[in-house]
Length: 368
Image (tube, rainbow, N blue to C red; front, side, top):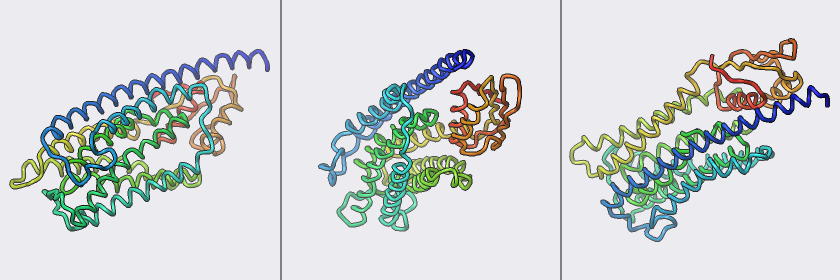
């Protein structure tokens, strides 16, 4: 290796390390906020629901229904692993490769699992048996009542299965995916769902899980197709609309929960209206923030500095799996192999990955 190449390599390493340190600091900040929000959720539920309502006696001996503490500890452990321990464990390691088929299996499982929950919720109430609003939870051993209880309980279990999403991000070192929205959403759902499945596993309160299961069928179908590789990605233009659907979902949940506060003779506990409404607002604000940052900002300009041309080609080839000329990237013959990357919108999380990968090789991302 020449002396100039050695000097370049030495300059490269601190830049990459600085970027990793910045990512870890941001992850730790996201983790602190997510943990605080999760604890607030737990104490709010304990104060407004556990202290004022009786439990459903039909599930007194079911796994993780006697007390919310196992769910709470699991949520906090998840936050700790994905925002602190995991990134530090991976700090001096290469991203884990060869998990594509495992991810495809996981996403396919999630599609089937959430389809089952959605079907059970529909067949036992929301496909026509339930009234649109003010449906009372019966707590009986009638088949449809037990069927809705079954759907509610498996929906609760599914929120722990969702943790695996983030574990994949950690081992792949896709830390930009582990946003405050992502961590808070995954950490909040199990503990908030616990209060629903233990105190109101039927009737009006199950609308949230019913709709959310359907959205997850769409979401994991997208992830399954995306995991199939670059040949499928041109057909995934509808990714942007998934976030819109998620925001509409939370608006619907908020309105559906709040309506019982203004309808007379509605025999549904008002505690759950305030509970679901509050959670819906939190998620709505988080999703709106994500949507604005991901899709509504002007495209980013990737301003490049001196970089070996062969290295540029390798980065583009590995991330885009396309020739160097694709997606507006055009190497420009210049002194010191200076290349320019045309302004582009970051249309998806995949593009954000590319931007971060190039950044780690001494590019600088600047808003246009």
